[in-house]
Length: 360
Image 1 (cartoon, helix red, strand yellow):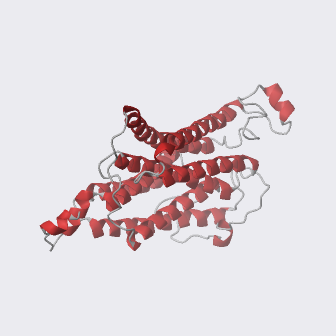
Image 2 (image 1 turned 90 degrees about the vertical axis):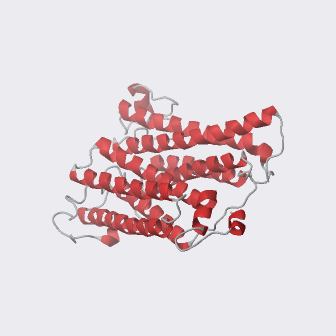
Image 3 (image 1 turned 180 degrees about the vertical axis):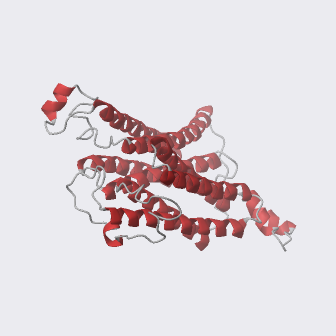
């Protein structure tokens, strides 16, 4: 159903919603990258408490820090890195709240993504909780991995909300999606989530360079590995997990598992691309998706060969962000794109009739 005529104020508010949601996509990507940087420079425990830092809202001087936590010496640079991440994450939460408040006016309007807005609010609140647990549980790998997945979920929800809001502002706001999720799309998405989780697990257990060399690992195609310990998901809460607690064979298993996951994901994306390549409207998005995957693989290999330099490790996180955005855009155009629907009807060996195209 098309949006009815409204006041100039309503039109302005809708434009603000579209703009703010796009800003949220960019801002979320920044927060994810700053979070990765915080972890890579070992600043995740730069402040031993939460939400403050040594009991203050800004990084205090050494004397106050010593009085608050005598057993945790202040490292000012790391503390500031951690607090900058918290400030940015808090600002992102305020942006989500602003979107919910501004959009409440249309919560009963057909086509308005009110459920997506509320889902985004719930996830951002959970992210705040995971941020607290990351500190209080001393970088427990399970929480660190879930915190990464939560950040990427916020990114997807922001992007989906933006696309829905743009549609709400168009003449097709009340139209239903043109296609349902197919098993092939579902499998590709599930494998992507699994691979992201494997990446987070490898990072939180400091298994990024457990394997020397590529494509072999430590000079072997199948090195000595401890899979049960590497993927033991009930690690003890209590120890400080900075720099990890696992032995070498367990970390090697995690790294090899991450490599195998990348291979399976790549095969699924190739099958997905070939399945829908005849649809001209989908080709740019499928190419973007497969291209983002290829870039991510190259960056991953470079990280291993170069022994995980900071800038390249951060670029690997940026590659994960690009891959998630690419998958979301490809899925969106699969479900909604008018052009791709027409292309599907007129694919190889098919000729779309005027009657069929009228329903596209």
